[in-house]
View 1 (cartoon, chains in turn red, green, cyan, brown):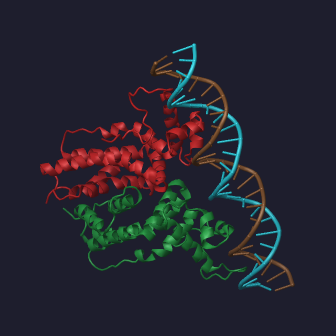
View 2 (tube, each protein chain N blue to C red):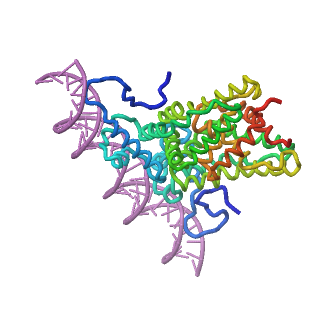
View 3 (tube, chains in turn orange, cyan, red, purple):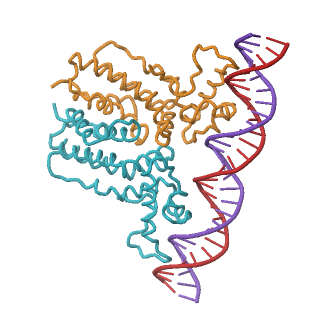
Length: 205
Length: 205
DNA sequence: ACACTTAATGAACGCGGCGTACACATATTA
DNA sequence: TAATATGTGTACGCCGCGTTCATTAAGTGT
């Protein structure tokens, strides 16, 4: 089993260790500082600034994270747990559609969308960040959708020869695309529009 | 009319000017150096390295470009002119599908795909780069597809209530997504798979 | 009590790229 | 020949990076 909630620095849940225990409040201040800085677009994300904003020592950050982006990833993961809980009621189509709406929700909200841009930027320059981003952010979310798709294919609601990964790409990558590259409007309506385009390709002939 | 072939530094096509004329060969060496460096993944793209690689003076680069990424964009535009020429023969569906295949072609080839990643990374950190990337790279390509979609909607081959921009997103952004973020295979087959998913949403009921 | 272990701080260092400024050489037009 | 614009080379200060070190703090073990 994979721990999706922390990139590198697991404070060892209930493990009683020797030495001085890590200060949870400090960690929280650091994560919040990173999220705040990343929300203010145009600000370069660096250990220097984060430490200053959090009122922490720079060395402390270096101890726990390898890069500012991995730090930010930890912050984002904790702030978006809810999006991984999904209803298992209703048709597969309705559940999948709800996931698309959720994704638009998260990526269009400034306090999550903007940090996600900084995260993606890191993923493009640092392979380690890219790996962590895939492992801890993208994959868990794709798996939720993959599960729903699989259910629908079994019950016959969807066609059985679907390429699940490609369907997920078609449904979700446009949302990332609008957030990251283009400047086209990204709002609730886009989820509907997108769904209307892809949905016909899901149902059996 | 918009000049899509140069971001900032137009050498004024046939304009006879005073002073010493710009050296075209030097410009070419610089563009090539940038493309080569961007192809070697893991290398940070900076004026310093580009100048060194091109055997040019760093000052010269600062004169003509505002950022290494805008320089690289110029290089990419010149190397992918062909992709903007498209056949106007055949059904709209066939022509649109061909565009998807071309896109996969360009983004999966290392000598264009990797530089494009560097370009996208720049677009995520520098708003000016982002603007140039949209204006000179994304928009012209989207317009080709938009034209085909428009044709198909007029002839009745496609449904008339399509949101063209959203269709384009659904068809092309998954390709960028696979190049930039995920590590899923990006090959000829993906174009076909993608098309099979989206195509049903295009034809009239 | 004491030793031991880990966390957090703060100061300092060298490195490298960035952006700019300046002086100079070169090529072309008026 | 004068004027103009391109290209070169050097030098400078700045800032963030990544690391090292010494020090203090907060918990464990016997």
